[in-house]
Each structure stands twice: as C-alpha cells, then as structure tokens.
Image (cartoon, rainbow, N blue to C red; front, side, top):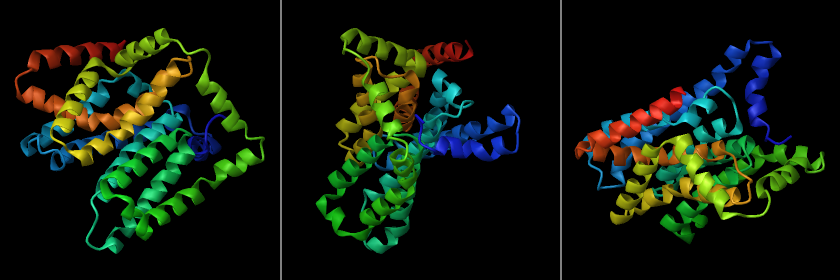
Length: 303
C-alpha cells in the first residue's frame, strides 16, 4: 500500500507464472540498462545547449555518464531490487529528453503534438511509479513556463499532456479512495519524520557522498558553475530534475524522514551534466584526481 501500482504491475506477469527470483530480477536490470543508455544519450547531446562544452568531448561525456552510474554504490542495489525509484530513474531521464525538445518551440506547434503526448504518457507512468513524481512534474512545468513563457499555455499540447497524465494516474486515486487514502496518509507520516535537527541534515550529506560517490559530487559542482557561467538556461532548467527532489529530500532528512535511495532519480538526472564536467576535467589533465576518486568509489561498490 505504500507504493503506487506500477512496481507491482511490472513484476506481476513473471510472479504469476512462478518465474525464479533470478528471472524476476531481470526487470530492474533491464530498467537500469535503459537508464544508463538514456544518461549516455543525454550526456552526448548536452553540448548543443551548453556551448562551453566542446562537441569533440561528446563521446567522452557519454562514456563518463555510464561510468558515473557504474561507480555509484546505491545504483547497483536498485539494479537488482525493483523499487519505485528504479522505475522513476528511467522515467526521469526520459522526461528530461522530452522536456529538452519541448523547451524549444517548433515553427508549427502541430509537429510537436506527438512529443506532447509522449510527455503526458511519461508523466502518467511516473505518477504510477512513485508519489514523488510530482516533483519531476514540477520541474517539467517550471522548465516549460520559464523558457517558453505563459504563451505555452495557448497551444493544445500542454493540455493534452495533462489530460493523458491525469487519465493514467486514475488507478492511484481510485484505489486510495476505496481504501481510506491509506497510501497518502502513510507517505505523509513517513516523510515528515520527527523534530528537525541540523545534525541529521549533515549526516544526510555524508551518506549521500558514500552512496553516490565523491566524483559525482565534484562533477555536479563543476557542471552547475559552468552552466550558470555560460548562461545556458535550457540546460539550467533541466537541472531542476535534480535540484527540486534533492532539496526536498534533504529538508525531510532533517526530520529523519528520508532514505539514501530516495535521491537516486535526482542523481541520475544530474549524471549527464556531471559527465560533461568530468570529461572536461579529464581533457584538462586532471587524471590523477579523477582516477583516485574513481578507484575509491569502485572499492565502495565492491564492498
């Protein structure tokens, strides 16, 4: 009852036929592979919206996107255990790709109708995957309204996407309405935790470094600085897929109401950006630092 239905639906066919656990675990492994490929694709194409990142490093950035995912310890847990976060990781990257297309208006809005429908389907699936998908939806809304302005609401696309998403998430509300809204009540109590304490927030950041690796933290810091310095606002709005859920989870951690894997979709959203920053650092000769951090994370993964 604490999860939306998609995580159960994804496993149900194999469970119904009595498939072995090893076969059932192929579902999260496939999702993890798709996530790696989506991160690779995004990293290779970000140079088109961040002119500070040379096109000649696009291939290297794609490789680093996969590498940063492989070197993040928690990602390996989500690759064999199907949690809502495993689904949301894949859907978040897909949402980023679609949003990047839509923040640039087409000359003929009708040509983007299929993309708007795809956005609605992805938002609906995200809502069926995890309740915090509302934060990804907020990132989409902010990105579109800030880059295209209020006039984006004058075309049919956003309304069609909203309608498609709303129809897809009906099962969540119908089931809860017939079960005393147990999911929402549980999540609200589970997320708020207890009395807010600064030491819990500090512990949260420490755990995050171990769970996702210092190299990803370093790449993130460098990428944010480079994107803001280059005034690459299309790319900056995509960073909201990281900033919003990470900030909310960090705040909840102060009350003791967060778990390390809750930020996995957010970190994977930042991976394409961090990968471009790391590729640039490697090209600039920072080999020893990157090797040292990569080796450290590899040891943590093995442990």
